[in-house]
Amino acid sequence: MSNAPVYDIDVAAFRADPYPDLARMRAQAPIAFVPQLGATLLTKREDVFVNEKLIDVFSSCQPDGLMTRLMGENMMRKDGDAHQRERRVILPCVSPVTVKQVWLAQFAADATRILDALAPCGEGDLVADYAMPLSAHALRAITGLVNMDWREMDRVSQGMIDGCANYTGDPVVEANCHDCTASIDRHITEMMPVLKAQPNHSILSAQMQAGLTDEQTRANVKLAISGGQNEPRDAIAGTIWALLAHPEELARVRRGEASWQQAFEEYARWMSPIGMTPRRIASPYEYGGVRFEPEDRAFLMFGSANRDESVFENPDVYDLRRDVRHSIAFGAGPHFCAGAWAARALIAEVALPKLFARLDGLRLADPDAVRLSGWAFRGPEAVPVSWQKPG
Image (cartoon, rainbow, N blue to C red; front, side):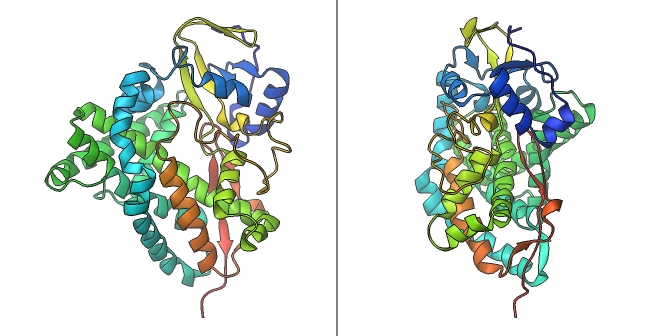
């Protein structure tokens, strides 16, 4: 175990809002062992940025890690050439060119259809009624699992995310995760002969064409689902909530002083839908006065790094005038989020502008009713809103 200072947390309070504890850690013990999580947390931006790249020490290979045990050994749990070989197969599916030429029109059509049904209602929950179906439809297409209902896509994604963040070992959470991965496997099996006959730009199809093993293919589809649904879903609903809760920032966008892209990127810094990434210590290492031992577990805390006071002025404030170039919301090293371009297009080019253009008088129904939760993955549980009915 590392010799880092010990910092105790209340797990429930940390899940509800990790930022007060993370601020105290940055000030008092930037590298701290948290016994409730069984891991050493790195909370300063520079420490995360530097050490995420040191794969010989901070290894993604975690044979006994939650993600590997629950989902299989996907490319996120590999380093070096093994990681890059699988990454090269998948990247063309979500490259800027493919996003623009293949996926963007479908994203826009899905958003229009969802808003057509939603607009006459005059009220709703932006998580369940907009962000959830929009991100799920996008993920169905990108993964190739168009045979999966969008509601099931959201369910299995959330189930895997809950499982991968289940560091307290809740057996109910683990059982649900296994049920979700079994559902994904059934849908993959069903789609394989379809995509063999008619290949497309999807992740499942690309891996089959490249000759990846069945184990690799299934694990990487699960990886795409685990992050490709909840993170865009949470960022869509969260950015809309942030803009509605900060009308002066929304006004900047409407006046053309800031872009929808800036609104999303600042939200991703401020509230970090991906709050951390776990690593296994592969070799003895000393950094910042802390000694790490092989097989220690370390968490690189993106959410904390993005609120580092030494990098960002007034980091707890949502401010579209901020320079977010030092944000590491999508990671910083060789495991930089492969779906970043797709997420940016879905959120900034489709979800935000289409919603605000379509729903006149959009406002929070009850600002106090919005609750965000999570520290490994963070997002709003519900965003109740109302607007003027058309006509």
